[in-house]
Image (cartoon, rainbow, N blue to C red; front, side, top):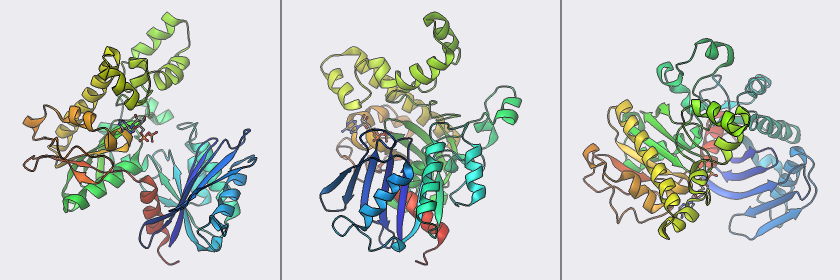
Length: 401
Ligand code: ADP
């Protein structure tokens, strides 16, 4: 079965077409600047040159229309007709407490996602737009929703509740949700395959370290704790996000700087903090590492803070899991940053975590990077959220087409 995977942002749309008989990628692409001047589609048939289409695209429906044309084009396409698409898998950020797994999209599902808009005001509206546009253009093709929050729904209340008045939960659903669930799920499944052990028998700590970053404690394939919280601002230090801070800082800074608390949270803590905020140089680890090597102390401090925060979560999750069988590194930094992986794992030998410097000298490849006698295995696993979405989609609609 061929599956179209769609990930809609407010002005962008990422897509892939996968042949699920052998999990191969047939084509992928990105539409940018939807609804604004300079709309552009970048389409790539696997193994061929990029095809670029610059044409006005007023909305997501028009954008998807152009994507479908490109997919059927005799020159750049991979489909003879749209009927070859057996199902569409949609990435959706927030499903609140409603769904603990992927689901076939119905009117009720769309309603439930609309009810979650106040929990993810930037992400859910474009995700829903993308679903509706695909439904209009492909009325006979089943659509599946795959949610960033779903994998974390197995957390217990004692780990997802905040110690604030209970009514804040019952009235407004303020609790920890967690994000990057599709990635944590994918890499924990791959970890079990790489270790050749049943996932049900493994305790795994997954570290998704990209521009956005989160850790998860996965027991027998189920998430028991994760570092992002009510929003993706919580937990680890990120490219531009602070991660966890003392909440009293927000009021203090607002008063001192004469700005609103909303400005502190949505601008300062989300966009000007993290690696960028501490280093004053960049949110990109490569830039910050280059400067640190040249002697920039703030850059070194930012990297040291990042590593320590990941270490703290590893320690916390070792306790929550009563020991781990494996630690997984994934996403941009986790897959590529050899020095950062080494720094995070340094000095954890008494916990049975021992990285092998030579094996760790690798990028973007599924492999074991711990010493052969390390009690806790350390794995590098490139994430593949699109493949996970496509796999869930096939599992839900069946493989009849
Ligand atoms: P996103 O959260 O946007 O999906 P990614 O997972 O793509 O982020 O990660 C992007 C980040 O990965 C970049 O900002 C960069 O800091 C980091 N990165 C990518 N390649 C390297 C590398 N070779 N060394 C260090 N950091 C890298």
